[in-house]
Structure formats: C-alpha cells, structure tokens
Length: 280
Image (cartoon, rainbow, N blue to C red; front, top):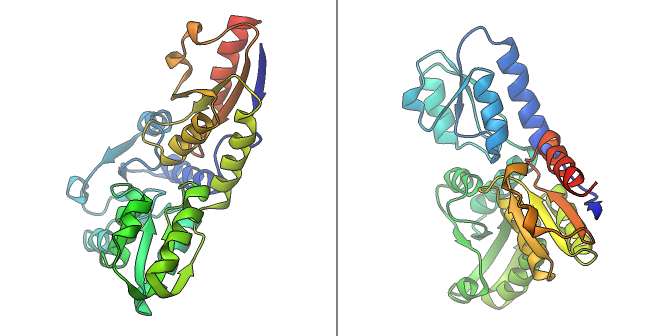
C-alpha cells in the first residue's frame, strides 16, 4: 500500500491561534473557565479541553457572573459580547482573524447601502454571528437556483463563509452579474481553505481511496470530502482511526490522506499508524 499525504494538513493558522489562546488561559486560570459553544468543530479537541477543566455551555445564562468565558473561533456577535460584559465576565475572544475580516467587510457593505449576499451554510456558527453583526440585513445562499430568485438590485456586495468551496464561489459570482448594476465581490474564503481544496483536488486524481479526517460538523472538512468524491475517488470522511474499516482497503491501493483545518496532528498520526499496522 502507498500512503500519500495532502500538502496541507493539521491546524490552519486561525484554528491554531484560537486553540493556543484557549490553552494558555485554561492553564493559567485559577477559577472555572467556560466555553460558549465548541471553540472549533472537532470533538476530540473539545474533549481535551473538558479534561483540562473547561465547561462547554450553549448560553450565557449558564455562566456565573464574574467568570471567564472563551468564545468560538467562528466569531461572536456584538450582542453576546454586550451581554457578557453586563454579567462582568472576562472574555477570551478567540475569533479567527479571517472571520473578523469577513465581519468588517460585511459591516462596510451594510453601511454603504449594498444588498448583501453571503455564500454560506445558513445555520453555521460563523454565518449566525456574521448576520448578528449586520442585524440580519443579508441573504444567505448556497446554490445557483437561490441566486436566480434574487430580485434586481442597484448594487450588490457578495461575500463568503470562510470555509466554502472556492470553485462554487466563482460560479455564484458570475450568476450575480445579471442581478445588478454594480457588483462588489470580496473573496473571503480563507487562504488555508483554498490551499487545502486545491491540494486535495490534485491528490484525489492520483489515488484509489481518500481518507478525509475531521469533525462531522466541520464545514471545511465536508468541503474537502465533496471535492474528492467529485474527482471520482472512493472517499471516507472520518473523525478518528476507530471509524476506519479493514475491508475498505486492499494491499495494492494508493491511499490519500487529507484533514480539515481543525483536525489535530495526533488524530491524523493515529490514522496513518493504523493503516501501516494493517499493511506493514
């Protein structure tokens, strides 16, 4: 068996920065630390933080006053921040820099009267926090058919969730040209996401099987799996080595390994080692 790794693996810059910031504060905190939702979409990382003493909650009401709260890397709304300050909470804001940039661009478009169209997943945490920033003054789309339903607008601003497929973003951009006099397109898909997508696109062409490692709720990992499937490679999206099955593989296979931006190195290494144990 030949195992080929994607050129881009492990934590991206934004995830690493968020996770490191959370680790540092948990290690130095003398009191209880709360996470307002999973900091990233990777169950293994969340379990690690729980073991280190962090408590994951879904609502500020679950956090006692004057406690410390860690926000998600996907962003946090101004309203939530305001409510946290009213409760005298110490806020560790781990929002990814790329996500912050999208929020800034959206605020600019909103201020300057653009009809805002966002390429994204309607219930993704990044999109929900982004909509809060601009008071829901936007439409979220994911398909060409949804673009066709948009009425003609004088000027449109088009942005994307940071983890979406760059190739689909380009298609939707062209579709919007018929909907407006002025179209401003900001490519807000983060560089790490684009690099990973290009890397797996090439890798999937070279192998028989693709193993894409990452959380089941991770949007960027799901995009990678979709790209691999579209290239015709037999693709398995797994979270850990325990989800792999011996019967998926043959000794003569070429197996490609890729991971989402929130997948830690130790989880990736365990998958590789299990394959080597089976076919050493």
